[in-house]
Image 1 (tube, helix red, strand yellow):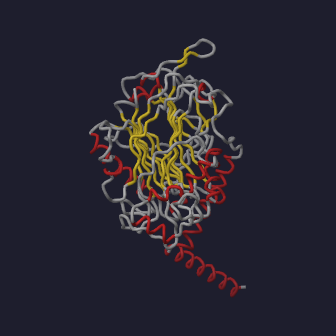
Image 2 (cartoon, rainbow, N blue to C red):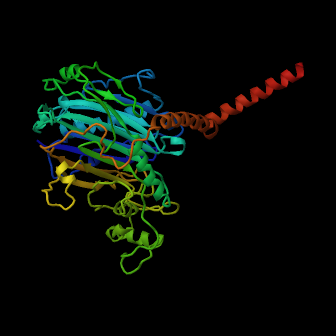
Image 3 (cartoon, rainbow, N blue to C red):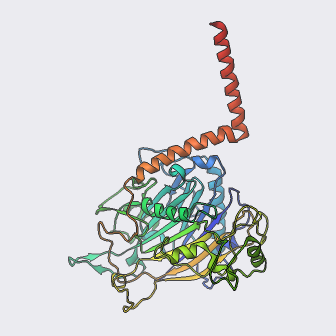
Amino acid sequence: MSLKIFVGTYNVNKREIDQDLSSWLFPTNSSITDKPDIIVVGFQEFSSFPSAFFSNSSYLSNASLSSNITQLGNASLSGGLIKHNVDEERLEHYSSLIERVIFANTRESYTTLVKSTFVGLALFIYVRDKSVTKWILNVEIAKCGVGPFWIGNKGGVGVRIVINANAIGVQETEGEDGTDNTSELVLCFVCAHLAPHSHNTYQRNQDFKSICERLVFSNIMYSENTNRDSAQEQQEDCEIMMTSMEGDSAPLLPSHNSKHQHYFTIYDSDFLFFFGDLNYRIELKEQGGFNNNNTLTISSLLDILRARQHQRIRACDQLAKEIIDGRVLHGFEEGELNFMPTYKYYVGSVNEFDVRQRTPGWCDRIFYYWRKRDELQGDPGGTAERSSPILLINYMSHPSYTLSDHKPVSALFVITPQHKRTDIKSGISNSPFKIDEHRNLKFAIGEASSIIVGCLWWLFGTGRGVRTTLIIGCVGFLVLWIVKKLT
């Protein structure tokens, strides 16, 4: 059995969408008419400043779109769930927009599995009840900030979903000790926002490395009694876990029969999707192979873009060069960039680029990775049969959305889980980077720094805050004057 997965990403420039999302989430030229089994929607610059610095909320739910969303762990620090629900209205507004579009285009029941915000990032995941919901064994959310002092204005939000693969047609495998292992299909989705500005290529590479090192899941696996007739029975017999911090987890549902605990990186997945505003730009300097002219200036770039000849400058994409040189997104694949750069547009414009202060680029991207079988990993010469279990159906941008200086991007995948699969062994990771042992401390520092920056921004960067500061200052001065007079 195959699973259809839709992934969408949009940097909304701290603005609130108020238009139909159908042409983005359900592209009309899709070659597959069946409904997606999993719908993943990520946003960057989701909340306006300074409220974004207080935004860190996550929800797990087994409720269908026709039911009320269950809110879990409101401000429960002891349970490992940290909530700062400052921008609650925006979260509900966006989720309502997405859910209306899903229902209007599918007329089927979907479960709102995850809604999560982290400073400027937001991630929504919906799963189709008919094909996925009742087979979910485990869900976790992890977050990390890679901004200054590890603040989450740049960073990543990841969700790790474990599905009973036997239920969707993957055969059981036999372990080394001769026992049967229930096959588990592990999906991971990471919504990221990396360092800005054209000259910051190295920092963007470091941001990706930091996300790999610190976006870690602490997973307790469950594998039995999952073939149920309803989502309610599934909820009673399986545990859905959430990692709100990095490495700390708390059960949201009653646990049973825990097997063993590991720490997993984003790479320790059967299928991994990494997407968002990665911020790599078009390089404005010597580029060998760029027509007969080795120099690309901002003026010539603008002429090429206005003529819609963006294929001519594909070689000037910073990210493509970094991947070829092995400095970022190790092992990932991407579809053809058969669309215009997604940044930087005049707000309100369909195709007019604003090059006054920023260099355009294919900033908004969707990458995918699949864990190769052991015999393929040990076969660099390519003698073993290689067949990709993931098919990219379409990969496109959507210029008609003019709310932001970015354009949204979408991709539709079909995955066919491999029948031969070896479980991840304890202490062995597929990640090219080691887990950061200080990730929890860095996250705590980032959280504290975020709150401090948010408070200072509110006090000195907003009209209401400045008035409050002036009032407090005047009252304090008056009190000091009175005390001095009386003494």
